[in-house]
Image 1 (spheres, rainbow, N blue to C red):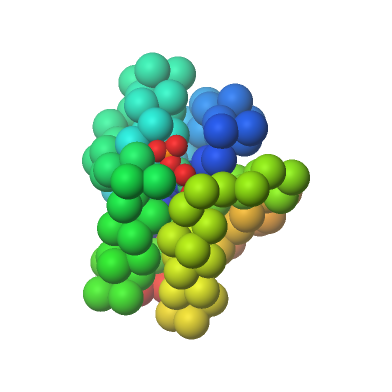
Image 2: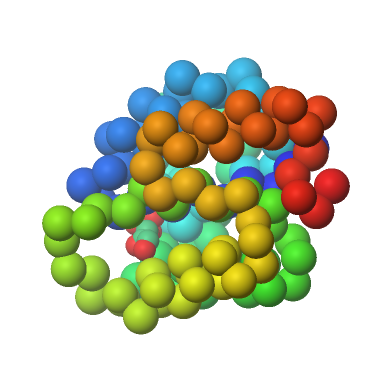
Length: 130
Ligand SMILES: O=C(CO)COP(=O)(O)O
């Protein structure tokens, strides 16, 4: 079982809800964490059990970053909107920086997110931190 963080910017929330629904069976075998609004969308689309953190602009990105720094997150799926400015851009950068620094499985678009789930399957369902 892996600890998976799920985050999507506003323009990518529909994509995230659809992606999670597509992979619902596999994702249900893992511990899911999400920023507040993304997580609420996922829960209403799928009924999956998700630990809801604060909304991204209110500190949710930083909470996920702290989990990565403490070795408590194996995977980050962060569907980023590359066409809109974010008021909390510094938090977004901090989260992507920590995901890179700590070498977690990290996807910021759907096709890579698919590849990450395949990698998890190949690894017997365990993330990098086992
Ligand atoms: O802003 C976000 C990521 O930077 C996502 O936060 P929400 O899921 O609360 O919208």
